Image (cartoon, rainbow, N blue to C red; front, side, top):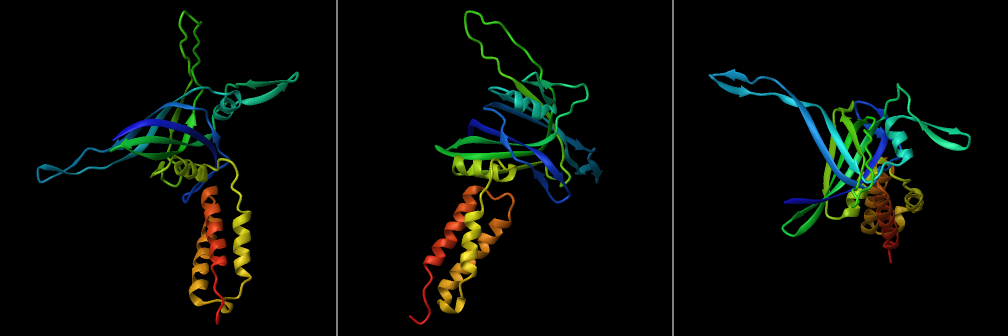
Length: 258
């Protein structure tokens, strides 16, 4: 097994933290990814010795650090991640960094590319709570050869109130990994109007007009569509698929007594 890629880092500000869930605002692409280096610090205890041997140990997540090397750090993204103000001064948009500025708590998602036995899969990661710090800035003059100079964002990984600091899943396609991250970090807007319309179209139908088998198939799809509709993390792909499944089930209805 080997990892051969890193793609599409997405950041979204945390808008609400409870013991049940961590909720995010609208996410956006941070930049193009070059590398991600994550280090986790674990808290532990000395082993419990019994019968002259170590019989129990205890450890857990304490905190961590992350270094994201990216191709570029745009002014708007810099202001967001570091908590700086954007001020119009004489028609020029300035970023003003204050002494007490602190970056917001954000979630970060990215997709890896893994190769095993000649087959590619796409592990997706979401670090649920990070606070980035002011990046160091270094620049060099151009010499005889071009030397790429890329920014690095360093952050502290923290434990959210719901007690889950990371989420991860592996997908067969790159797009499926992107959709999973987008659903959680709310990248762009998910349009559920089509799904709502299909559910409404099914609900006005009378079950006694159709065979029990075909109506049962529709009822299952409407039930599943309702779950997707109520899920704030549902991706556009899942919403569209649920709407299509209900539409297909409506078209497949068979009249009773025919």
